[in-house]
Length: 115
Image (cartoon, rainbow, N blue to C red):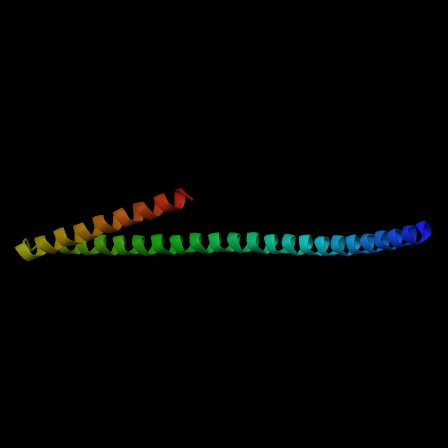
């Protein structure tokens, strides 16, 4: 009877070892899959950051172009030599718009620098 019990225990031990080996293989496969996904996630984050930086740069370029356009319009109005009240109001309006754009540009630069 002890011999049968020993054989049963040996069989149980062998099955447990086989289950352990299978579990180790699944764990290894899962860890490898996790590493691949982590790498993919890291790449996606880097790409997203790059795209955000490109978008911010395009926004800054658009703001700079708008500021340059306001400067050109202001200069044209100031050179037109007509000191009509309407021209003066247009100049003031353009300067306010330019100041607003400059403020936006400064905010964009701060946003970019704080990342």
